[in-house]
Image (tube, rainbow, N blue to C red; front, side, top):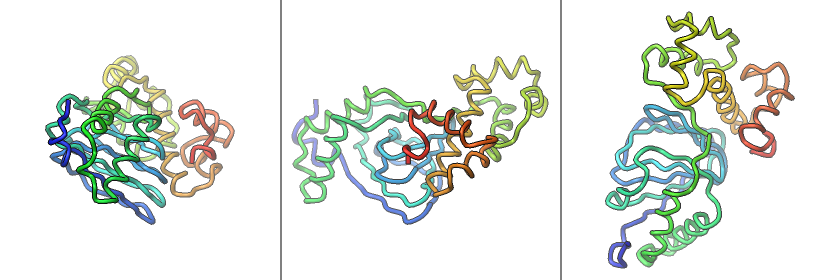
Length: 248
């Protein structure tokens, strides 16, 4: 349990506003960092994953964990830094989750205290609530795992450079110097997703970026490789639970 005397520097709040997209090079922090958005889309690149953080979601970045960031479109976000010694019981790899309920109210309280210059008044109980929520909230699927095998890394880099490319599985395997059987076996072993499911998620995450930048749904559908908006909307809803229009 966090004692009252430990809470004066336990949490630090920061707001970030960008009128248009901004790129932050790979870096790391001594403290842990919880990042979220009020408006717009934030994407983070880690060594072994790519994450999309839309409004009402957040990502936990462990202490010392390298990451690069990009905001898409007009962006209004926030960051909560957690003192290094308090992060030891928290996830040691990045975690994305929905900000709601208890965590949302606790974050509002920390922000309010910080704006009044009274951050040291945050109780140990409030800090503990936030730490517990980071640890226990269920992770979301807004993640694109990056494989470790050099052949697969080369393959996914080509896929991500243009998610609209339409090739058969056999052609992708050949381009990577693999048999289809090896591709089908190795890809889920290293990413937790089938090759087909990974490609679909890559398309949807690219679509989120384009939508956040203001592109029309019809144009986004074509840009990420769908023949029509209806098919794109159906897949988008399956992944996120909402249509593109409602999501943003």
